[in-house]
Image 1 (cartoon, rainbow, N blue to C red):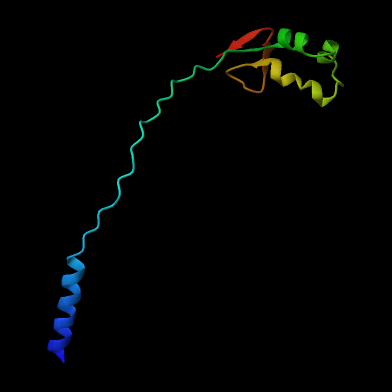
Image 2 (image 1 turned 30 degrees about the vertical axis):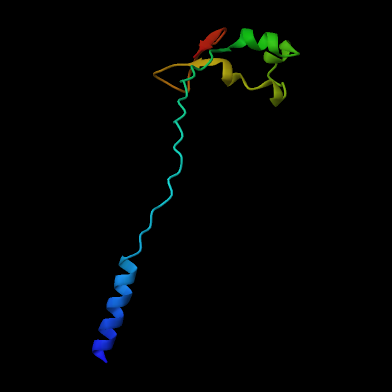
Length: 95
């Protein structure tokens, strides 16, 4: 019985080793190289907001609605004390 089992196993192993499998080759695509895009400079400050807002006098109104922003966007802060305002940002470039 053991000899028959060994012969059967040998036949199965021999037939499995006799098969060949060749994976199909997929066509290679050339890698797409993207050029680094430099960020466009942005203009910020009170002067810019005066020209882009419909009601510029709302920039100085302390009771203005939230749609006109808060005053913290155009205030420069001190490096030593981050909570202490240093001055107003009239015109600034950022890139």
